[in-house]
Length: 406
Ligand code: ADP
Ligand code: ASP
Ligand code: MG
Image (cartoon, rainbow, N blue to C red; front, top):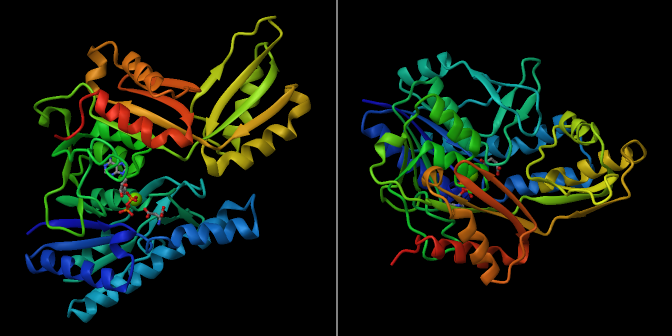
């Protein structure tokens, strides 16, 4: 007998029939004698709809109320799945984030889980109940509802698996595992049997939304046995493992892209000490994450252009903050562009091999694609390009690094 956490994403619980199908899958595990906790997402499309309502009422919304609205999608699915399990003859109940509780910090809209008290949930499982937990939601110590950022149900599942000391955590989704690139845009993408935590972490952080970054971080930290697989087929998925479990390491293991990018340029900012701190300080205070940054060398030593990227959902907020401080920062003008995408090449093999970045730049040049911003880490190279070239760039890179399936 094992204790397991199963997570089902939006498409996997996309309608009532899918929820009934999930109940059948849970039944298989319960019939095998396992203690099962199920984490569910909102039905596909629901979270976007809820975000749309918030934007329509209040574009620069109060994030605490945003969380109240957007966390509700998961509540619906958790109740429905508990009911579907009861219809199959099981004792099942839902546990909302505040009932467990799943405690988070107060960074509303992208909160971090601080602790989960698994006691009551474990007692319920030991008493023979199937536990159903809505993903994505938590609560602060002063009792306000939080959400964990888009894709956050993955993190709920891994955190719960860690708290319950589960033997495994299976993430059911709408593709058969983790691929060398998004299989929806690269037909020749290959399914990986295994991927290291580190590579998956990097892939997720640059946009491969098959797992939320924090879920991978947490799985790595707590050594959660994590598998990604399809809820639509019965095939083995991809295991996320330690580096020593992967026998042969590719130079490049995957290509990822993120459309959730927007670029801001401050034209002719004063070139003197302290200016960058005055620009990025208020953005950080407002929880705006800045990602890629380039600052040109100034020709005259007086003024320079500064370009950086933020997520699309933070763009309006970031622009408002910078415009408010126009006089203090003394830039000439501000431009922004959200028709950009970040494309990244990832591989632990890069640590010991030169030339990966050069091949990337050459391949994009051959496709006639202009690179706007570049950033690198030990095991990844990212470029910002115009969004219209996304598919072309990802496919070309997938092929140039020899990742295409035969
Ligand atoms: P869920 O609702 O189950 O959480 P998501 O839409 O969040 O599903 O994540 C699954 C999607 O991630 C897939 O449909 C696929 O388009 C996308 N994806 C992006 N990169 C990859 C990758 N490298 N491997 C697998 N899927 C990927
Ligand atoms: N429903 C949330 C979202 O769409 C969380 C999740 O599905 O992981 O982002
Ligand atoms: Mg997801």
